[in-house]
Image 1 (cartoon, rainbow, N blue to C red):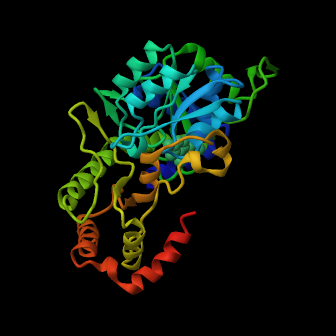
Image 2: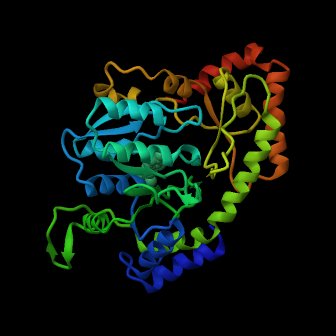
Image 3: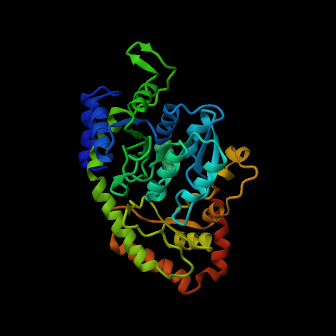
Length: 374
Ligand SMILES: Cc1ncc(COP(=O)(O)O)c(C=O)c1O
Protein backbone atom coordinates (compact mmCIF):
# COMPACT_ATOMS: atom_id res chain seq x y z
CA UNK A 1 0.00 0.00 0.00
CA UNK A 2 1.78 3.13 -1.20
CA UNK A 3 1.13 6.66 0.02
CA UNK A 4 -0.98 7.28 -3.09
CA UNK A 5 -3.21 4.28 -2.30
CA UNK A 6 -3.61 5.25 1.36
CA UNK A 7 -4.47 8.82 0.37
CA UNK A 8 -7.08 7.58 -2.10
CA UNK A 9 -8.62 5.44 0.67
CA UNK A 10 -8.72 8.34 3.15
CA UNK A 11 -10.19 10.62 0.48
CA UNK A 12 -12.96 8.10 -0.19
CA UNK A 13 -13.61 7.72 3.56
CA UNK A 14 -13.90 11.44 4.08
CA UNK A 15 -15.75 12.46 0.92
CA UNK A 16 -17.79 9.60 -0.51
CA UNK A 17 -20.76 7.46 0.39
CA UNK A 18 -19.07 4.41 1.93
CA UNK A 19 -21.16 2.13 -0.28
CA UNK A 20 -21.88 3.12 -3.88
CA UNK A 21 -19.46 6.07 -3.89
CA UNK A 22 -18.02 7.56 -7.05
CA UNK A 23 -14.79 5.54 -6.74
CA UNK A 24 -16.82 2.40 -7.41
CA UNK A 25 -18.16 3.79 -10.67
CA UNK A 26 -14.74 5.11 -11.73
CA UNK A 27 -12.94 1.88 -10.89
CA UNK A 28 -15.48 -0.06 -12.95
CA UNK A 29 -15.13 2.33 -15.90
CA UNK A 30 -11.33 2.10 -15.81
CA UNK A 31 -11.39 -1.68 -15.47
CA UNK A 32 -13.79 -2.16 -18.41
CA UNK A 33 -11.54 0.06 -20.53
CA UNK A 34 -8.43 -1.84 -19.47
CA UNK A 35 -9.90 -5.27 -20.26
CA UNK A 36 -11.65 -4.04 -23.39
CA UNK A 37 -15.28 -4.84 -22.54
CA UNK A 38 -18.40 -2.69 -22.63
CA UNK A 39 -19.14 -3.28 -18.97
CA UNK A 40 -17.44 -4.09 -15.67
CA UNK A 41 -19.33 -4.61 -12.40
CA UNK A 42 -17.44 -4.79 -9.12
CA UNK A 43 -18.25 -7.20 -6.31
CA UNK A 44 -16.98 -7.98 -2.82
CA UNK A 45 -14.98 -11.04 -4.00
CA UNK A 46 -14.11 -13.16 -7.01
CA UNK A 47 -16.42 -15.87 -5.67
CA UNK A 48 -19.31 -13.39 -5.62
CA UNK A 49 -18.45 -12.40 -9.20
CA UNK A 50 -18.63 -16.08 -10.19
CA UNK A 51 -21.97 -16.61 -8.45
CA UNK A 52 -23.45 -13.54 -10.16
CA UNK A 53 -22.03 -14.47 -13.56
CA UNK A 54 -23.45 -18.01 -13.37
CA UNK A 55 -26.74 -16.58 -12.21
CA UNK A 56 -26.60 -14.04 -15.05
CA UNK A 57 -26.56 -16.83 -17.64
CA UNK A 58 -29.45 -18.49 -15.80
CA UNK A 59 -27.57 -21.51 -14.44
CA UNK A 60 -30.08 -23.70 -12.68
CA UNK A 61 -30.69 -27.06 -11.07
CA UNK A 62 -29.34 -29.96 -13.13
CA UNK A 63 -27.35 -27.90 -15.66
CA UNK A 64 -23.99 -29.38 -16.60
CA UNK A 65 -21.03 -27.02 -16.19
CA UNK A 66 -17.53 -28.00 -17.38
CA UNK A 67 -14.55 -26.85 -15.31
CA UNK A 68 -10.99 -27.99 -14.73
CA UNK A 69 -10.43 -29.84 -11.48
CA UNK A 70 -6.96 -28.29 -11.38
CA UNK A 71 -8.02 -24.95 -9.96
CA UNK A 72 -9.10 -23.19 -6.79
CA UNK A 73 -12.42 -24.62 -5.61
CA UNK A 74 -14.25 -21.27 -6.02
CA UNK A 75 -14.14 -21.63 -9.83
CA UNK A 76 -17.08 -24.03 -9.75
CA UNK A 77 -18.73 -23.27 -6.38
CA UNK A 78 -21.00 -20.51 -7.77
CA UNK A 79 -22.49 -22.81 -10.41
CA UNK A 80 -23.01 -25.65 -7.91
CA UNK A 81 -24.63 -23.35 -5.33
CA UNK A 82 -27.21 -22.67 -8.06
CA UNK A 83 -27.74 -26.41 -8.49
CA UNK A 84 -25.45 -27.18 -11.44
CA UNK A 85 -23.55 -30.44 -11.82
CA UNK A 86 -19.79 -30.12 -12.44
CA UNK A 87 -18.12 -32.09 -15.22
CA UNK A 88 -14.38 -32.04 -14.61
CA UNK A 89 -12.03 -31.61 -17.55
CA UNK A 90 -8.34 -32.54 -17.68
CA UNK A 91 -5.64 -29.93 -18.14
CA UNK A 92 -2.74 -29.97 -20.60
CA UNK A 93 0.96 -29.52 -19.90
CA UNK A 94 0.37 -25.77 -19.69
CA UNK A 95 -1.97 -26.38 -16.72
CA UNK A 96 -5.06 -24.98 -18.43
CA UNK A 97 -8.11 -26.77 -19.81
CA UNK A 98 -7.35 -29.13 -22.68
CA UNK A 99 -9.32 -28.18 -25.84
CA UNK A 100 -9.29 -31.85 -27.00
CA UNK A 101 -10.64 -33.15 -23.67
CA UNK A 102 -13.21 -30.41 -23.69
CA UNK A 103 -14.40 -31.42 -27.12
CA UNK A 104 -14.73 -35.02 -26.00
CA UNK A 105 -16.84 -33.99 -22.94
CA UNK A 106 -19.05 -31.77 -25.11
CA UNK A 107 -19.57 -34.63 -27.59
CA UNK A 108 -20.88 -36.87 -24.82
CA UNK A 109 -22.94 -34.46 -22.68
CA UNK A 110 -25.42 -31.66 -22.95
CA UNK A 111 -23.58 -28.76 -21.36
CA UNK A 112 -24.77 -25.30 -20.35
CA UNK A 113 -21.48 -23.61 -19.72
CA UNK A 114 -17.69 -24.05 -19.76
CA UNK A 115 -15.42 -22.16 -17.41
CA UNK A 116 -11.79 -22.15 -18.55
CA UNK A 117 -9.38 -20.93 -15.86
CA UNK A 118 -6.32 -18.87 -16.78
CA UNK A 119 -4.39 -20.59 -14.02
CA UNK A 120 -1.24 -19.00 -12.58
CA UNK A 121 -1.78 -16.06 -14.97
CA UNK A 122 -1.25 -18.23 -18.06
CA UNK A 123 -3.90 -17.61 -20.73
CA UNK A 124 -5.89 -20.58 -22.05
CA UNK A 125 -6.01 -21.23 -25.77
CA UNK A 126 -9.21 -19.23 -26.06
CA UNK A 127 -9.46 -19.49 -29.86
CA UNK A 128 -9.75 -23.30 -29.80
CA UNK A 129 -11.96 -23.29 -26.73
CA UNK A 130 -14.25 -20.65 -28.26
CA UNK A 131 -14.51 -22.53 -31.57
CA UNK A 132 -15.47 -25.73 -29.75
CA UNK A 133 -17.95 -23.99 -27.44
CA UNK A 134 -19.61 -22.11 -30.30
CA UNK A 135 -19.98 -25.27 -32.35
CA UNK A 136 -21.86 -26.89 -29.46
CA UNK A 137 -23.78 -23.78 -28.48
CA UNK A 138 -22.21 -23.69 -25.02
CA UNK A 139 -21.72 -20.50 -23.00
CA UNK A 140 -18.17 -19.52 -21.96
CA UNK A 141 -17.36 -17.77 -18.69
CA UNK A 142 -13.65 -17.04 -18.16
CA UNK A 143 -12.15 -17.42 -14.70
CA UNK A 144 -9.47 -14.74 -14.88
CA UNK A 145 -9.14 -14.48 -11.08
CA UNK A 146 -5.36 -15.05 -11.40
CA UNK A 147 -4.71 -13.35 -14.72
CA UNK A 148 -5.32 -9.59 -14.69
CA UNK A 149 -3.74 -8.31 -17.90
CA UNK A 150 -2.83 -11.67 -19.50
CA UNK A 151 -3.40 -11.79 -23.25
CA UNK A 152 -4.37 -14.22 -25.96
CA UNK A 153 -4.02 -12.95 -29.54
CA UNK A 154 -3.70 -9.37 -28.28
CA UNK A 155 -6.97 -9.63 -26.40
CA UNK A 156 -7.05 -9.43 -22.63
CA UNK A 157 -8.43 -12.44 -20.82
CA UNK A 158 -11.86 -11.69 -19.44
CA UNK A 159 -12.96 -10.18 -22.75
CA UNK A 160 -13.41 -13.34 -24.80
CA UNK A 161 -16.33 -15.19 -23.17
CA UNK A 162 -19.90 -14.19 -22.38
CA UNK A 163 -18.43 -12.92 -19.13
CA UNK A 164 -15.09 -12.89 -17.31
CA UNK A 165 -14.43 -12.74 -13.59
CA UNK A 166 -11.51 -11.38 -11.57
CA UNK A 167 -10.46 -11.56 -7.92
CA UNK A 168 -8.68 -8.81 -6.00
CA UNK A 169 -7.75 -10.97 -3.02
CA UNK A 170 -4.52 -9.49 -1.59
CA UNK A 171 -2.16 -12.08 -3.12
CA UNK A 172 -3.39 -11.39 -6.67
CA UNK A 173 -1.48 -9.33 -9.27
CA UNK A 174 -3.56 -6.35 -8.12
CA UNK A 175 -5.74 -5.89 -5.03
CA UNK A 176 -8.24 -3.49 -3.54
CA UNK A 177 -6.66 -3.74 -0.10
CA UNK A 178 -8.88 -6.64 0.94
CA UNK A 179 -11.41 -8.90 -0.75
CA UNK A 180 -12.94 -7.78 -4.02
CA UNK A 181 -13.92 -8.95 -7.48
CA UNK A 182 -15.11 -7.86 -10.91
CA UNK A 183 -17.30 -9.20 -13.71
CA UNK A 184 -16.50 -8.07 -17.24
CA UNK A 185 -18.89 -8.54 -20.16
CA UNK A 186 -20.08 -7.18 -23.49
CA UNK A 187 -23.58 -8.49 -22.86
CA UNK A 188 -26.08 -5.85 -21.75
CA UNK A 189 -28.34 -8.60 -20.42
CA UNK A 190 -25.62 -10.06 -18.16
CA UNK A 191 -24.56 -6.59 -17.09
CA UNK A 192 -28.10 -5.69 -16.04
CA UNK A 193 -28.55 -8.99 -14.22
CA UNK A 194 -25.31 -8.81 -12.18
CA UNK A 195 -25.77 -5.10 -11.48
CA UNK A 196 -29.16 -5.77 -9.96
CA UNK A 197 -28.37 -9.04 -8.20
CA UNK A 198 -25.32 -7.69 -6.37
CA UNK A 199 -27.57 -4.96 -4.95
CA UNK A 200 -30.48 -6.89 -3.36
CA UNK A 201 -32.26 -7.24 -6.72
CA UNK A 202 -32.97 -3.53 -6.64
CA UNK A 203 -34.66 -1.81 -9.56
CA UNK A 204 -34.94 1.56 -7.83
CA UNK A 205 -34.09 2.58 -4.26
CA UNK A 206 -37.12 0.91 -2.71
CA UNK A 207 -38.39 -1.43 -5.41
CA UNK A 208 -36.82 -4.87 -5.84
CA UNK A 209 -37.89 -6.87 -8.87
CA UNK A 210 -35.51 -9.78 -8.17
CA UNK A 211 -34.61 -11.73 -5.03
CA UNK A 212 -31.01 -10.57 -4.91
CA UNK A 213 -27.86 -10.64 -2.80
CA UNK A 214 -25.69 -7.97 -1.18
CA UNK A 215 -22.32 -8.46 -2.85
CA UNK A 216 -21.11 -4.91 -3.51
CA UNK A 217 -17.54 -3.60 -3.36
CA UNK A 218 -17.04 -0.80 -0.80
CA UNK A 219 -15.99 2.67 -1.97
CA UNK A 220 -12.72 2.61 0.01
CA UNK A 221 -11.68 -0.66 -1.62
CA UNK A 222 -12.65 0.64 -5.06
CA UNK A 223 -10.54 3.77 -4.55
CA UNK A 224 -7.50 1.58 -3.80
CA UNK A 225 -8.24 -0.68 -6.79
CA UNK A 226 -8.41 2.33 -9.07
CA UNK A 227 -4.86 3.36 -8.09
CA UNK A 228 -3.52 -0.21 -8.25
CA UNK A 229 -4.88 -0.64 -11.79
CA UNK A 230 -2.59 2.19 -13.00
CA UNK A 231 0.45 0.15 -11.94
CA UNK A 232 -0.73 -3.29 -13.01
CA UNK A 233 1.09 -3.37 -16.38
CA UNK A 234 4.42 -2.33 -14.89
CA UNK A 235 4.06 -4.88 -12.07
CA UNK A 236 3.18 -7.60 -14.60
CA UNK A 237 6.24 -6.66 -16.66
CA UNK A 238 8.45 -7.09 -13.57
CA UNK A 239 6.89 -10.50 -12.92
CA UNK A 240 7.62 -11.50 -16.51
CA UNK A 241 11.29 -10.48 -16.23
CA UNK A 242 11.63 -12.52 -13.02
CA UNK A 243 9.91 -15.49 -14.68
CA UNK A 244 12.25 -15.33 -17.72
CA UNK A 245 15.26 -15.41 -15.36
CA UNK A 246 13.88 -18.51 -13.64
CA UNK A 247 13.20 -20.13 -17.03
CA UNK A 248 16.80 -19.56 -18.07
CA UNK A 249 18.53 -20.56 -14.86
CA UNK A 250 16.40 -23.51 -13.78
CA UNK A 251 16.23 -25.25 -17.12
CA UNK A 252 17.78 -28.72 -16.88
CA UNK A 253 18.11 -28.63 -13.09
CA UNK A 254 17.25 -32.04 -11.56
CA UNK A 255 13.91 -33.40 -12.73
CA UNK A 256 12.31 -29.95 -12.73
CA UNK A 257 9.50 -29.24 -15.16
CA UNK A 258 9.21 -25.50 -15.69
CA UNK A 259 6.10 -23.52 -16.66
CA UNK A 260 5.34 -23.27 -20.39
CA UNK A 261 6.99 -20.49 -22.35
CA UNK A 262 4.67 -17.96 -23.95
CA UNK A 263 3.64 -18.81 -27.49
CA UNK A 264 3.88 -15.88 -29.88
CA UNK A 265 0.14 -15.33 -29.46
CA UNK A 266 -0.05 -15.48 -25.66
CA UNK A 267 1.27 -13.43 -22.79
CA UNK A 268 1.27 -14.78 -19.24
CA UNK A 269 1.29 -12.45 -16.25
CA UNK A 270 2.90 -15.05 -13.94
CA UNK A 271 0.55 -14.69 -11.00
CA UNK A 272 2.57 -17.65 -9.77
CA UNK A 273 5.74 -19.32 -10.93
CA UNK A 274 5.01 -23.01 -10.57
CA UNK A 275 7.61 -25.73 -11.04
CA UNK A 276 7.04 -29.48 -10.90
CA UNK A 277 9.23 -32.17 -9.39
CA UNK A 278 8.69 -35.69 -8.05
CA UNK A 279 10.58 -34.51 -4.94
CA UNK A 280 8.14 -31.65 -4.32
CA UNK A 281 7.71 -32.14 -0.57
CA UNK A 282 11.43 -32.52 0.08
CA UNK A 283 12.26 -29.49 -2.04
CA UNK A 284 9.58 -27.44 -0.22
CA UNK A 285 11.10 -28.54 3.11
CA UNK A 286 14.63 -27.66 1.96
CA UNK A 287 13.54 -24.21 0.75
CA UNK A 288 11.66 -23.56 3.98
CA UNK A 289 14.80 -24.52 5.97
CA UNK A 290 16.63 -21.84 3.99
CA UNK A 291 14.03 -19.16 4.71
CA UNK A 292 12.32 -19.34 1.31
CA UNK A 293 8.55 -19.63 1.40
CA UNK A 294 6.74 -21.68 -1.17
CA UNK A 295 3.14 -22.65 -1.83
CA UNK A 296 1.28 -25.59 -3.29
CA UNK A 297 -1.48 -24.57 -5.67
CA UNK A 298 -3.24 -26.91 -5.13
CA UNK A 299 -2.59 -30.04 -3.05
CA UNK A 300 -6.16 -31.37 -3.52
CA UNK A 301 -7.77 -31.03 -6.94
CA UNK A 302 -11.44 -30.08 -6.80
CA UNK A 303 -12.68 -33.56 -7.69
CA UNK A 304 -10.89 -34.87 -4.56
CA UNK A 305 -12.32 -32.23 -2.22
CA UNK A 306 -14.81 -33.76 0.25
CA UNK A 307 -17.45 -31.26 -0.92
CA UNK A 308 -17.20 -32.54 -4.52
CA UNK A 309 -16.64 -36.26 -4.07
CA UNK A 310 -20.29 -37.02 -4.76
CA UNK A 311 -19.84 -35.57 -8.27
CA UNK A 312 -16.63 -37.46 -8.96
CA UNK A 313 -17.32 -41.10 -8.11
CA UNK A 314 -16.04 -42.82 -11.22
CA UNK A 315 -13.80 -40.29 -12.83
CA UNK A 316 -10.16 -40.71 -13.67
CA UNK A 317 -8.02 -37.57 -13.80
CA UNK A 318 -4.51 -38.98 -14.04
CA UNK A 319 -2.68 -35.84 -15.08
CA UNK A 320 -4.58 -33.58 -12.66
CA UNK A 321 -3.70 -35.97 -9.81
CA UNK A 322 -0.03 -35.95 -10.80
CA UNK A 323 -0.14 -32.15 -11.09
CA UNK A 324 -1.41 -31.83 -7.52
CA UNK A 325 1.35 -34.15 -6.21
CA UNK A 326 4.20 -32.38 -7.97
CA UNK A 327 3.50 -28.61 -8.18
CA UNK A 328 5.46 -26.10 -6.11
CA UNK A 329 5.02 -22.32 -6.34
CA UNK A 330 8.29 -20.49 -5.77
CA UNK A 331 8.55 -16.77 -4.93
CA UNK A 332 7.52 -14.28 -7.60
CA UNK A 333 6.34 -10.72 -7.02
CA UNK A 334 7.28 -7.35 -8.51
CA UNK A 335 9.60 -6.50 -5.61
CA UNK A 336 11.69 -9.66 -5.71
CA UNK A 337 15.18 -8.30 -6.34
CA UNK A 338 17.78 -10.08 -8.45
CA UNK A 339 19.97 -10.88 -5.45
CA UNK A 340 17.14 -12.69 -3.67
CA UNK A 341 16.24 -14.45 -6.88
CA UNK A 342 19.85 -15.57 -7.36
CA UNK A 343 19.79 -16.97 -3.81
CA UNK A 344 16.56 -18.90 -4.53
CA UNK A 345 17.97 -20.31 -7.78
CA UNK A 346 21.19 -21.31 -6.01
CA UNK A 347 19.37 -23.07 -3.16
CA UNK A 348 17.16 -24.99 -5.61
CA UNK A 349 20.16 -26.01 -7.74
CA UNK A 350 22.11 -27.22 -4.70
CA UNK A 351 19.19 -29.45 -3.66
CA UNK A 352 19.53 -31.41 -6.89
CA UNK A 353 23.26 -31.06 -7.68
CA UNK A 354 24.38 -32.10 -4.19
CA UNK A 355 21.57 -34.69 -3.86
CA UNK A 356 20.47 -33.06 -0.61
CA UNK A 357 17.15 -34.91 -0.89
CA UNK A 358 19.03 -37.96 0.42
CA UNK A 359 19.68 -36.31 3.81
CA UNK A 360 17.99 -38.25 6.62
CA UNK A 361 17.37 -35.06 8.61
CA UNK A 362 15.52 -33.46 5.69
CA UNK A 363 13.43 -36.55 5.19
CA UNK A 364 12.37 -36.39 8.85
CA UNK A 365 11.41 -32.73 8.53
CA UNK A 366 9.46 -33.41 5.34
CA UNK A 367 6.62 -34.99 7.32
CA UNK A 368 5.94 -31.74 9.17
CA UNK A 369 6.04 -29.67 5.97
CA UNK A 370 3.69 -32.07 4.19
CA UNK A 371 1.22 -32.16 7.09
CA UNK A 372 0.65 -28.44 6.63
CA UNK A 373 -0.61 -28.93 3.07
CA UNK A 374 -3.95 -30.52 3.86
C1 LIG B 1 -8.87 -19.43 -9.97
C2 LIG B 1 -9.66 -18.70 -8.92
N1 LIG B 1 -10.99 -18.58 -9.08
C3 LIG B 1 -11.75 -17.93 -8.18
C4 LIG B 1 -11.20 -17.36 -7.06
C5 LIG B 1 -12.10 -16.73 -6.05
O1 LIG B 1 -11.77 -15.41 -5.74
P1 LIG B 1 -11.99 -14.83 -4.26
O2 LIG B 1 -11.00 -15.44 -3.37
O3 LIG B 1 -11.79 -13.35 -4.46
O4 LIG B 1 -13.39 -15.16 -3.88
C6 LIG B 1 -9.82 -17.43 -6.87
C7 LIG B 1 -9.20 -16.81 -5.69
O5 LIG B 1 -8.36 -17.22 -5.01
C8 LIG B 1 -9.02 -18.13 -7.80
O6 LIG B 1 -7.71 -18.27 -7.64
